[in-house]
Length: 255
Image (cartoon, rainbow, N blue to C red; front, side, top):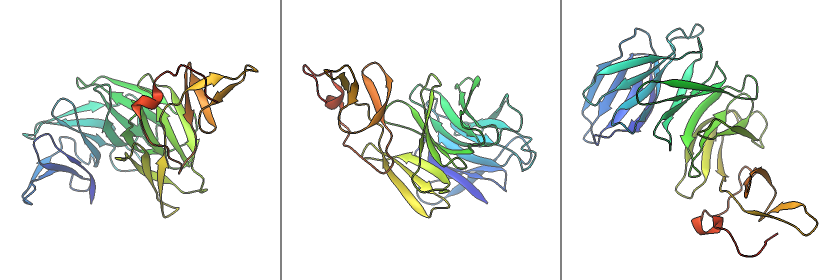
């Protein structure tokens, strides 16, 4: 059984072998080399390229114990180092490189988002929604991380400081799973049980200005205000074009 796949820093593709307990490398010509994981029955799953030129992957171990509970690091020469996650049986799944130079990963059973530095130091952040079952995770164009909450049917956003916000998916029980940033500046995700692709979950910051009666309003459409000068849209399957210029301060109010 195969798991995740990612582009490597060496020009090859790297993938996980869940049942084979190995990390595979395939050249663009189709030549495959396999490298064993140190821990037996580690079930490597998600994989991502790190800013340090290594490959990083999740290791949960076979359910229900999820006893392995580690993040692995592999050099392009196949040298593996493993780091234990503080929360026991957390079931690490997805992993991605973050805008802060760290790796970020989901803990399906731990109901947390984890951050690991390239030196192996791990910090965990609890998801406010209980038993949300976080799965896929990706870096967004807004400098935050975005993840799918399979059981709570939401898309979550976590800043590099650990602040989490969740947005519901319109289709009930859709089971969002994989998620990625698109070339259009939007987030796109799979709905495992809804048999759909959720697209254009947009997350660009918008300016707000106080109206004459003192009530803050967002430019464009309704959104949540998250901080001074910034608010975030909470509409799934709605997109506005990304523009750095549109986030610049304006000389006059817009409502």
